[in-house]
Image 1 (cartoon, rainbow over the protein chains, first blue to last red):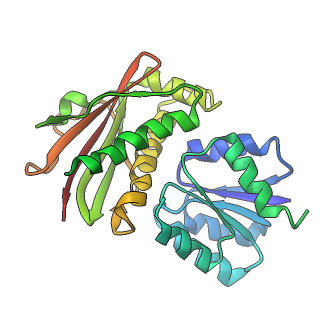
Image 2: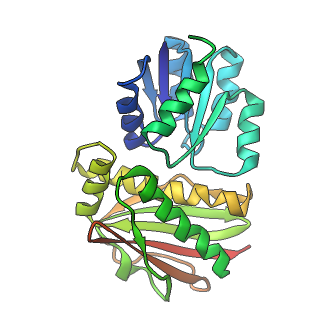
Length: 121
Length: 150
């Protein structure tokens, strides 16, 4: 299953990539802001996307809107430090499918990804 | 700043280390300071705060500690660019987690990161600057919280 990682932190992008090595996903792209994410989404059409909220140029909330305008079938897992309910509700209303709060460990992310796609496998 | 507000950051930084590495951090008693320069180490992440609080949050740590934190996360590197990224991410995570208590009007910026100690770190002269010492694997970092209510 094709997956794309969107986060402005290279450490987080690498950490997620490392965890994916043990999961059944094919990493098709990484992006460090929402503008890059939308461009790469159109090119790779991943089934699953992990998405940060606080990013330069275009934040995660705007990115969800832009991606949903292109294709609302993608499963977006928001991975953010923003731990307030309003952010979570807003992201889910716009089309995000799951929410994982930073900081996270390997097990947290693996479980969140499995939950995200369990009805697709 | 209220003491309950400070507890949010004490818990937040402890949670970061406990969640991402296999070693718990020891968070010392916060203390007031009139300046931040004495607490700046090799790499520093800075988040600007606006909304229902205003000011800034700094996380500053020595290179050796950051290399070991990365290693604890299973990522091996001592490249400066990666360590800069890590201090920014730690600062961003602790600041973002604070919205659980302070709500959605606690606005955080994207992180600014610096290497080394600049001649002068500009902070508000009217705000109280709290320094939260963190000890992890015999190394010391500081979380510096400079906030006032809007």
